[in-house]
Each structure stands twice: as structure tokens, then as C-alpha cells.
Image (cartoon, rainbow, N blue to C red):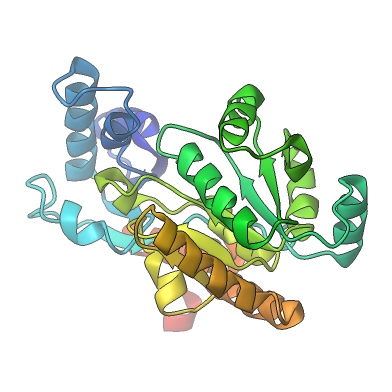
Length: 313
């Protein structure tokens, strides 16, 4: 069996399947061509878009197993012609985190807050890439609104991307250098910085391709005990707020929605220990790389290879 994670490996796996007759799993890590369009890199009538969509449909049609990151996208792509008569096994495996690594650490919190001179400030963190479908401007706008209600708030950007871009958007909103920081953290240090924060922020462009998206940063935030501030329309993430109740959901990018979200998040800071327990429990239930990711892949492998598990014997 060949397990192909995303489109380029799927094109390779398809050749192997046709030549050697091996089983093939197409692990759709996102709708690649649509993501490039939504990020503004390609046009829908461009040759790269059309070639990628053709390869995508061929891989889906040939797959013995299909993985999607979200429940929400499967009913949509399952109706595409390439899958309409398919007998491929399917499972949803969201982007998970290593929760042994991503966990709240009180010593790290004390160390990082002392290092950054944060004292008793309310810290919002964003971790990951900027621009494209990551809404840098809107996140800066949100923090500017936070500052009106909490003048001592601090915005920590953890990103390897263009730091001058962050400085540009923050300066344009009248936010001084003392009220935010930009750090290109080593991956192993990210959990310690998340431990220093009080809430995790992520605004992502709500578009068609993002229905298939499961942002890893959500799992990392929750694993480190942070309530979420996210926008609607990204994969299955609305349910993290509407059903699990571990943060604030922004329905539109405007001052009214921002003010509502801030009020909700302030409620989580009253009892930080309880908040950390709740968010951690959600992470363990939905995003643990071992208990969720590995187990779901294992079940799918058994179905594709027609292996009966010990528990079913």
C-alpha cells in the first residue's frame, strides 16, 4: 500500500498503483489548486490550476482509501464525478498535535513572561504564517480593538515570516513597539511561548478551499491551555466554539463582532486553571496525534488492506 499525503505524492502513488497494482490512499491535506486560487497565487482559468485539478480527480478516482481533514468537505467532494461510483474507504483525520510536547508549563510561562517583560499583561498570541489566506490585517484590527478595552494588552506574533510586515500593520494602527513582539521561534520553543499567553488568535480567510482545512495551530493552542479566538467558516472549527465552548467565534470582521469576542474571552480569564483543563480536554479528545491521528489511520489501513483487527476477531 502507498499512503500519499497531498497532491504531488498522490501523482507518484497513482503511477505505482498502475504499474504494480498496490493499494493507494489519497490523504487530501487540502484542496491544493483551490487554495492557490484563494490565496491569490493562481487564477481558475490558469494552466497550473487546471492541471492540478485534473491530477486531483484522477487520484481520487483511483484511490482505495481517501482521507479528508474535515467532516464538512467530504459530502461535497464525494459528489464529484470522480468519486460518485467509488467504493473507496474514507475517514476524517484532522491535523493533530503531539500533546506530550504541546502542553501548558507554568515554569515556561514564568520564564517567557519575565524574558519578554510582560508582568501581568493580557497576552494574545498568533502562531504561524501571515498573509495569503491568513488574515494579518484583520488580526491587527482585532488587537487594536482589544487595546481600547484593555490598554495593557500585548500581542505576541510567533512567525518566521516577514517581520517588517508585522511592524507595518501594527504601526499603521497606532500600536507601539512596547505592546507587541515578533519572534521567529524554533519549533521546540513554541509550546513555551504559548504557555506565556492567555488566548490564541487565528483569523483565516473563509473561502471554499478552507472548508477542507484543519489548522494545526488550533490543536497546539488548545493543548497549551489557551481559549480560541477564531472566525467562522474554516473546516469543522465552528463546532469548537458552538459545541465545545472553548473560545469566541467571530462571524464577521467588524468592531461589533470583535467587541463580543473580547467580552467572551475576558470571561475565560477569571479562572485560568479551569480554562486550561477544559481546553486541554478538548485537545485530547479531538486532536491527540496518538489517540486520534494514529488510531484513525490504523483503522483505515485495516479497511483498505482488508485486515481484521484483533478487537473484531
